[in-house]
Image 1 (tube, rainbow, N blue to C red):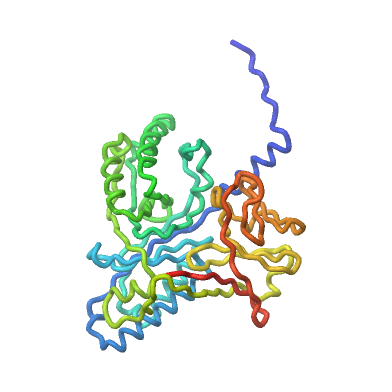
Image 2: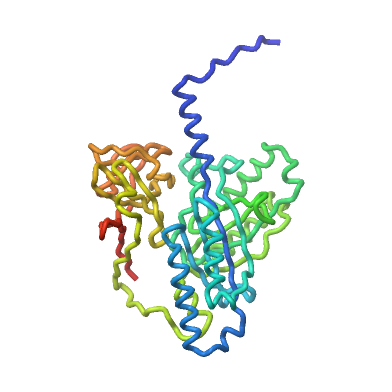
Length: 374
């Protein structure tokens, strides 16, 4: 037997990098899929009352937009037991409870039933998942950044206990086949979240795409993969249509409250951030604006705002290092650097810019704005 050669401990620099990576991989998002159904008696109310109910509910939900990422979807015409989905993503589960309570306190809340509710977290995958260029994909999966895809397909998922008795090597091999099939459908984007111990299921899967037939073909092909033999449950499945909340509410019935928009028309949208004295030089904050997380930075008294997700792997730029001389921020994940004034990628692994946003101070309060084109 060969003598065991002692392994040298990692250098202090390597240990620091390992610790830094472990810390950023431990940060997770909380995710909730809340499906609502309206009682048929609501549709028999006088139309003016219906309009008031919808407008009140719309205002209440919109009031949470700066605290979490909120995406509304309609299920009218695709399911009989659910009619609206509010896809919610936040740093803490607290806003979920507060939103649910606020919705039920509205007049329309008396006619709403929570048809389904799924609660989960993002988490690093147990399996080695690489992007087509060979890079690790773990960190990207910690952050959910929804696209503008027209359709969202959501379902809970449970594997058999036999799956967990297999070796990691055996499971990785089957997952490699599973992942390879998914790569054949690049127009379908998967968001995997984990519910172990949090809810009745193990995973909640949410697929975004503009073409339902792509998702149908993907699911059918996945049925033929080896790993599908270890599926215990993957229903119910929800087909959700992406639309503004006022449009989703109008789809329920009653008089329309959604304002008609002409395609190509633009509108400025502003969101309050915080009082100016709560964001000192060298500090940053994040808010949600039009479905995107925005990082707001105070650099020696000048305010800047840009999409908080690095264009490389969605790293949180608000947690990065700001260089006031260069007026740049470096992503804490893979050290891509962006110009805070323009959003341009200026160094590191990044080659795509991030969006920037207008910043104004009104009566001592910071606001961030963007232009929305319909």
